[in-house]
Length: 309
Image (cartoon, rainbow, N blue to C red):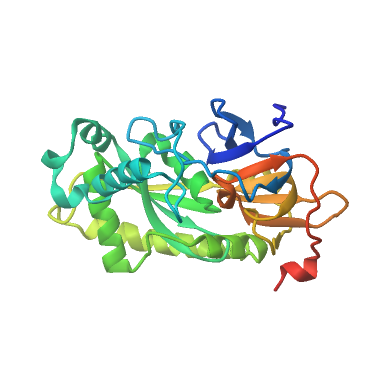
């Protein structure tokens, strides 16, 4: 297994599922960032109160899974610098409003991205939440893993990124399915989950409603849509190795911590601490861009009772 750097300063810049397993993007000092597996990661650190935060960079249509290292410091209250914030906002705005503006308004890179086949999915999270979402066909499995869905159904295929967003908005407006689920709900569900059978039943009922909606379309609402019915399961569900977890009561981005990562669902990591049999869950994104001092630390004590309140 690839070993983490044993000295710092160290910064976690991101998390990717593009390889099929969770990998964190780490940068030591001014060295180029590298990917390290989350599972098996042992990280003992203290957040450097005097350290300089790092911008986590930006992504675009061509390199969604390969952010470029940024030398700048982030804006106050943000994980990105002004330049990367603008680029991310422009990309997100162009992508999510493309179906309202039309193909002719997109730049060549975005136009090529929108020309790809896309899928519509319904994703279920362990607290019982269900959302509608979209992805290019080639990134669909990665997208669901990134979001931390526990199970999902692909309900439609489209020829391009404009038709897929038209359909997504139609599903939201007519069936009331949300397009986002908060990290708080995701973490709560991982610690206090609904049963798999219950989630699957809810997901199947919503999927049938969506397919009925698609069958009712006359071609004027959304064009180039093909109904689909395919299941997806989170790697942790398939492997059956997600442990019983408790919400971690401390913020990873302040103080000292010992993290022995066992598994991950989206950006939520399940981890133990030396000398304890309890397993906790927290959002690793709390650490993005935060300067870490690696080595000996004196973490605050944690008990299962503390984590429940």
